[in-house]
Image 1 (cartoon, rainbow, N blue to C red):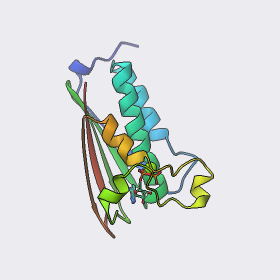
Image 2: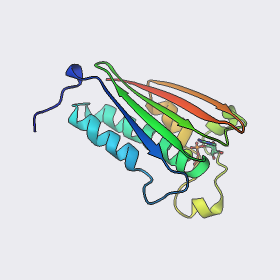
Image 3: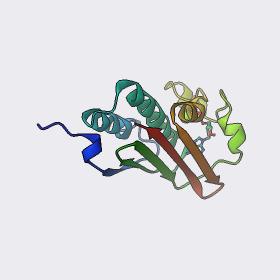
Image 4: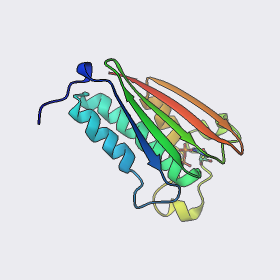
Length: 146
Ligand SMILES: Nc1ncnc2c1ncn2[C@@H]1O[C@H](COP(=O)(O)OP(=O)(O)O)[C@@H](O)[C@H]1O
Ligand SMILES: [Mg+2]
């Protein structure tokens, strides 16, 4: 197959994330990684994007009622927008703290709930924005310079 080049394509993709589904959990971020690798994104940036998108996806599976991840690729940046339909985050500053997690034991025994997801997203993205409304949902936008 012909090599795809980031600077020749503008690309948009949407992935639906199902709450509580640990069988499909991680598929969206895995697909994003495969796609961006094919587009020629370098391995260090690819790692940043893979970590951040995986954490975002897992948060939707664990903490939300479901939602979607949108991937936008332009010549200079990758944008990942995450929108879910609740329950929202009451205190974002607290939720962002490393080690803070409301995940119950049933989730922790599966290896999730270390409380590092949001800080990992912020640290791996070149730009990170989060908005949340209790009872409504959470919106995250991450930008990566490529
Ligand atoms: N999409 C979301 N919807 C509701 N709450 C969330 C969402 N993402 C994160 N949170 C809250 O923020 C906390 C910290 O998230 P994170 O840093 O990813 O740690 P973890 O997922 O391991 O608990 C979560 O425990 C949860 O209370
Ligand atoms: Mg998390």
